[in-house]
Image (cartoon, rainbow over the protein chains, first blue to last red):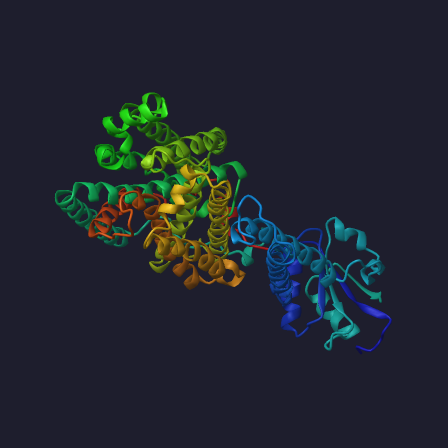
Length: 179
Length: 405
């Protein structure tokens, strides 16, 4: 049944974070893997409950910081000691002491660039359309509703079976939404 | 939470069981007695060496206590919930000030062994040569003692207010002490930064009366706060090994303690490097003498130990999220940090007396044991049959349930 491309998934609407959390845990136990939760505020522990993998962003940031550090050393050494050596106040052409602030700044700068733009990229932003907007109650998600969507691409997805399963978890409202 | 099976309340008693308390008292009491016995033997064998070793040990203890007090006040000012379960132990460390005042007595008695500015012939020569009046109006024995008494009086007052306010909530659950502690903490931050900086100048920087650095105070405080978080984490890991508060202080709390150790590793390095770079760049003889002394003979190796051990290794060990959540890594980090903090203070003090290179002495260990034994025993006596967590704090429950995102 997971083949209808016009269906994004089944929305289940809960009235408290605890109910949502229980439903997420039950859904994982039942073998569902492709699901997403939509809530008005962050809920501690829901990432783990959904089985979301830790982001790779940290490693990308490490790469960015190493690039910034290397760039800063190379820039100061090459301009100061190789390309255009000048004696200033009797200081060495290149020394680590005065270079560290630039090394620090460029490390931080490139790390923050990778952190911010990497985060945006990994989140798939900017995104002008999302199927959740087809859910008739989607305004409640920014107010007081806690929503779980089991996506149609999930191997376990079955329009009637999944509906029965989510109803058993205490969902207030159930709705199939278009992709 | 309305239905609470996600968050089962921790089953902890918050009082140290008698058998464990007795064992701790025996260990710390033995350290106290052996430490002082050995320290007195050290005094008998070599007065100067004793006072030098003792100053290092005293300042090691002092810097950690003052760093801890700053962080108790920061918790009140920010209204932190995560730190509430560990805050009573922070406060108990903070309450060491009266004991530190007693431990200061040997430093006061050793002024002539430690500080050149206490010798009348040195001062007479200085006044002739430099026409300076700092020795008449600030850096002399009388004012040194007056300042020390004033510092300890102020610190004890603040520590006592913050501690007794928090303590009173154990039985009353009242809100008012929380507000009172917030009120004491705001001016307290200013008062402690100022007085502790001046104390660092008096006790350590004035070992070389010609040298000055406006960053010296914050350098000492950064190291002290760093050592403090290592000590706090170490205490809770020992508690955990003995089943004390093992359900209340979770990986989430250790993660935050690890973040503080990591942050202060970087902060210390930032301050240490800023001090070094400004002096390197200005290249004035009366300033560079500090680093020249610490690049003479084997002191250069100790400087390298600080650069790599105090900063680089600790930075790499604590960088990853996982290492801050792995208790064995933290266990290593706490011991390592406390060791490096001691090396840092040794490096500040000893080159003034052993100019040609590092000269370790058994009296160093004896003085350290005496100071740690005294502070540790006083800390432990204060915990007997008392709440070891501020169970009446309005944020206590929130602090237990806290999770990192």
